[in-house]
Length: 413
Length: 210
Image (cartoon, rainbow over all chains, first blue to last red; front, top):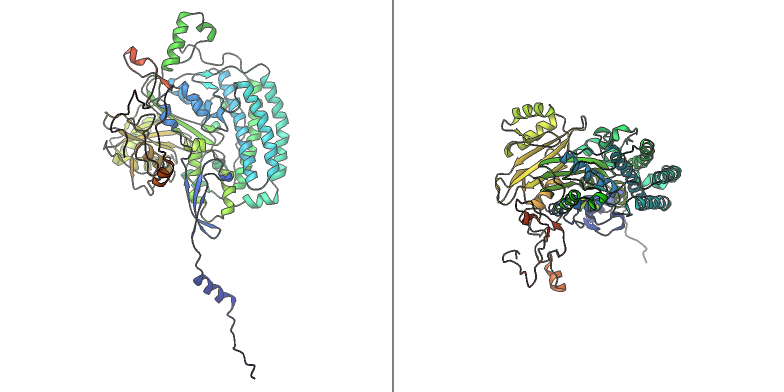
């Protein structure tokens, strides 16, 4: 019997690969990520088109949290809308309250007393710390570093206790009014804030030592989701996301409001604009906020905490309301008809923790805005996603979304 | 001062540009067809390199021109703002040129404005609804849209058939209490904007679009 066998040829690796790619053309996979995915921080949906693990196209779908805040604003008085601003960026309601009040005051031409301005700066910076604590904690948790989250959440809890003491509410503070504040600070409260700052700074160092040189964290964030300077400006990015891309723009320093020009602070700027830079910028901003808080408390002016002599805009003091006829009428008219704001248009944006939160108010007189447009920083920040997600891996999405630190409450309004 | 210089410069681009009353930054009205050249001049010659906000305004059902588009620009060098407004010609189907070619940031802002006010932007690459769902038939920020909303079918017929639910108007009993601006005192009295329908207050005909 013959033992002849057929001769087989083995093609080389390159020609095999070429044949395979013709034979197995990769199929485009459509993946709907969200709206309830742990890394989308709320209800964002991403319609992804994938080639293997690589993202070819990304189409964000927003609007799941749309509550019609702008329509509601057209139907209620200026002060009635304050609680709705709590629910924009619900992680920093005190900052939203202050920016909204300043926008309306600008339209009405009211100057608030120095003490009121200082308290607004103080609460806005505390809100910035609490928002960044949650933003950073959730971001690092998304990329696998759980310990930092434990530290930041503990600190955030302490801040919420302070907010509760100040405003009576932990989350939905509604602290400002048109022309002033709900009430003055309680006695001894600033000492507690200073005590918090003292305990807080070493913990920022702890978080930094846990993450900044952490191999896994750096591998997952460095050079991921790079946004160039030009793109950041063209897409209207604001806040830490803009500054991480190397654009030196901070409205607190560049277009100062509420007395920010009286304090010294540094504005951290990133170099590359990747996820790692966005983390570094937020970390440093928290330290600068502590610096601001200490200066504000050291310089805290006395005097009234709300503007006086605005009889058609600001409610009279309660003791006078109950004893004097004129003040009673004033109280009744402002409560029912709203503060009487003159005709005109104003656009004011301030530096909220997530970026520039803007209010455009078109007033035709009376106590109700004719049109109120809210410019949510998260809305603008997210609009760059279709550009920067292309070419990234699916596993980069949690890092990119975490580093953006968005809140759907102000994105969808 | 800046406003006067800017106005003179913009009138070189579009002669009919005029100053718009404003409580803060320089603001200008310009004709709709020169909106894009004016925005381009502001971006290229005057340093307004960032589009921070684009929105629209419904001036009321009766008024004409009914719709206005507004753009807010920021200069990252001088940190000053500018507002540009242009009235849309058609009151029924308002049209406006899109600024996406100048700033990609305009894409989402204009989609939102189309969604909520129904202003159509020409040359917009992807004019879809953004906050409401794609099949939604109304534009909620228009002044003739009631606060409570309209009764509508769900976006998916299959879900409607299976669950028997639909989009219902918001129950408005109990608030918000709002005083209208009116010269008559009895109309200024604050009252709840109750727009929910019941046996005593039946739904007016033609409110819902099938």
